[in-house]
Length: 184
Ligand SMILES: C[S@@+](CC[C@H](N)C(=O)[O-])C[C@H]1O[C@@H](n2cnc3c(N)ncnc32)[C@H](O)[C@@H]1O
Image (cartoon, rainbow, N blue to C red; front, side, top):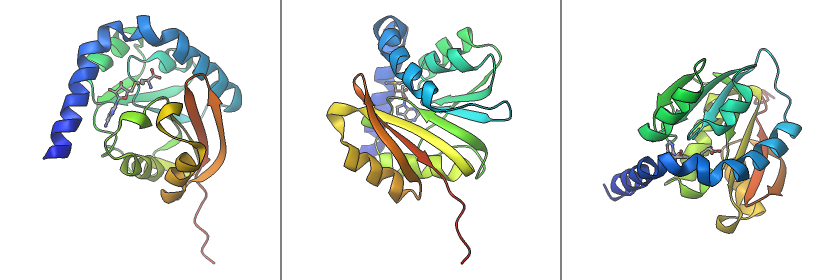
């Protein structure tokens, strides 16, 4: 109950501030995307999830060339994204309970999302579940709220492998891969 209320409060805060998000954060978020997209090659066949897509700032960069789905729990954030990006699907849902089958996506981005999530362990486990074997997750959090060791622990607890962690602007980013479980 306490968790639900706190999550609702956060959602409502994002709803209230959605209208000003792009004006406040576009520049700083774009710096992060530039660095992330320079490290991650997207392929034609990829199906990409933008987890916590907000107003679609990242999707604006990739949706013309790639199949990408945006998910966020704030209706107002998603509404702004929908108006900007006509050729993608958006789903309003909680990242702690993703409405997708196992191994549905090849790549998952979640930029500046982990710092505010009620149960980040659960979110990362959900993300790990819906990535196909061999796929990648690129997740970030505000630097002031975490550190490299914690971030790597978070992905490794979800059975992902931390390939690289680095800092860009105010964020700490982890690139994590999902390997097939060995049968041996
Ligand atoms: C700081 S914004 C980042 C938005 C976007 N990734 C970007 O790069 O601009 C965090 C986003 O995560 C969403 N979010 C936070 N917790 C969530 C949750 N539990 N489920 C779904 N979305 C969530 C918020 O609504 C918000 O749009």
